[in-house]
Length: 127
Image (tube, rainbow, N blue to C red; front, side, top):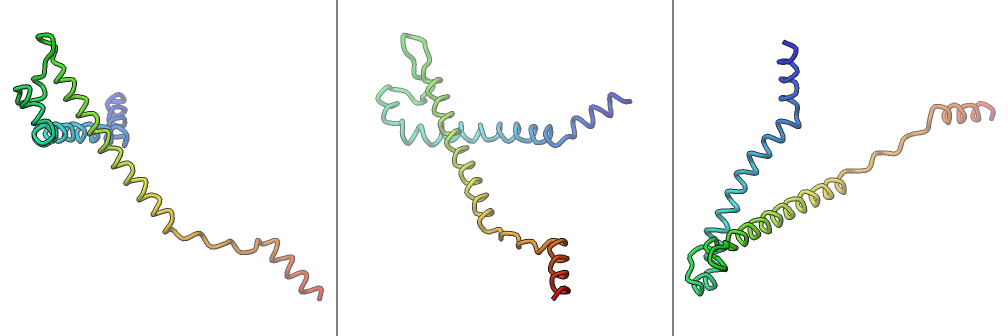
């Protein structure tokens, strides 16, 4: 029973659950980026170049009879888009954190300490 309870405690830690959620979301995000490249960017931006090469997809680009550098170019474009989107997300998060820091009021200054109050009372009693 000890090993099962240890495994349950390990599996239910926040970091493990967060990592699992991140992996699942990352997989879905990868599909979105792939669709963006294949269905939007390639037809809009690369259509003239691909039609000049008599190709329909960037993945079909080859050199020296069989080296598929089009697959590499597609992976590089995917990486650049993912990196840019993540940069924009992080930039937005950092900007919102700065706004929160600015809008939070500064704590009120602490009043005099107990010793200072006693000194003031003593001085008043002396007068």
